[in-house]
Every structure is written in C-alpha cells, then in structure tokens.
Image 1 (cartoon, rainbow, N blue to C red):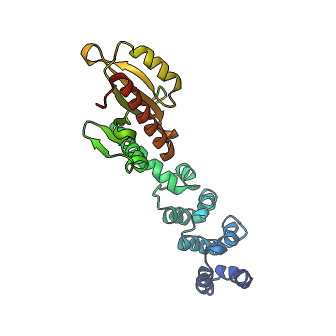
Image 2: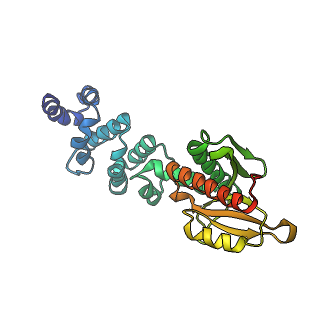
Image 3: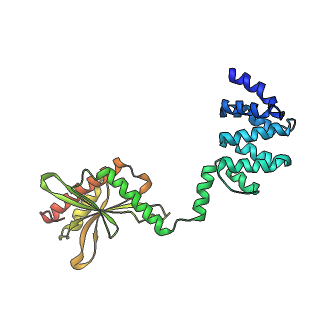
Length: 270
C-alpha cells in the first residue's frame, strides 16, 4: 500500500523538469511492479510529453518486455515520441528492426520467438542437418531407455544403432535401429530391425502363425537365394516414442525374434 501511495504522489512529478529526476529514481526503485499503473499513461494524450518520455525511460530501465506492444502503439500514434519509442523497443527486445512498424508488430508480443524464427529463416536447416538432428535425438532417447539393459550399445559409422541383449537361457539377440526414414507425410520414424536366421521349408507357416500374436513388429522374408533371411521389423513415429515405449518395443521384439530363431535353427547365431 505504501508503494502504491508513493507512486501516485510521484507520477505528477515526472512532468516537471525540477522534480523529474528524483521522482524517476524513486519510481525506478519501486520496480516493474509499477509498470501496470504507468503504461496507460504512455497512450494518454492528456498527459504531458515529458511525463510520457519519463515512463518510456523507466520501461527501458526495467527491460519490461510486456510494455513492447504499448510502446509500438506510441510509435504509431505519437510523432513527438516516435524516435524515443523505437529506441525503447530496440533496447527492451534486443531486436534491430529500424522503422519497419509492420515488422515490429510481428515481434512485440513474443520477441524471443520472433528472433528464433528469424534465425531459422536466415540460416535454414538443410535436409542433411535435419537428418543428423533426427539421428542424434533418436540415439539419445534409446540410450536413456536401453543402454543399461544392453550388453553392447554403440553407434556404428554406417549410420545405425547397434544393440545386443542377453536373454533367458543364456541366449542373445542383436538389434539395429535407424532414424533416417520418414512416413508418407514426412514424419520421422525409428526403424527397429533384427534377424532371425535363414528360412526353412516350413518358414511361411511359422511366420504367419507368429505374426498373429506379435505385440510389436512383423516377421518377413528379405533377400533372395543364399541371401534370403527371416527378419523382424517395426517402424514407429518418433513423436510417439517415450523411454518406456522404447524399452517395451525393443525388449519384446528381441525376445520374440530369438524365439523364432530358436524354432527355425535350434541354435543361437544372431
């Protein structure tokens, strides 16, 4: 209450050159909490210009970003304070937009977001940079989720994440993840892949039966002739993935793929 009463007594003193300096210093000490009372004075034509100039300077001193839209209105409507208002906008927002009031209109409500958008516009991310960021984000997510569970966890120079898991009965399964694929709409995908061995004569019936019950991924045949193999693959949109889902998907796929490998080969080669 004391600050409010003090502020009301100080405001008229901003209009008088003999009292302005001392009044401004005392209001400055009250802090930006006083801005709500002072801002309407900026656009009040009945107030002396000297008083409104003092209010502008206080907003600059406080670096009071919420004042920017009101200050822009001053620049649009008050020729006497036009230059001071533009200078105040530059000091408060850190932006250098000159006298382009339309551009200031885009910036004043969120100067930080505007600056970020301009930086992107001036230095657009290339497709390759986007892919690299996609890979880095995917790798870090999988690392947080699975690095402690995996007996091996490493990024290969060829551009994929390699993981090896120790399973029940002393068995093991290798998993590979890539992050450069996208769906038809261009959304990034995590592609999770593991091999189950070479096919046997009954492989199609095994795959068909297994695919009915798999929680994640599907078994398919890849390659031809001597290179033909049974693999398990899953594509999941990156924006759906959480650490919990990553663990569930990868560990479930590793277990199911190893089970099919055992049924196909009665060994543990992968």
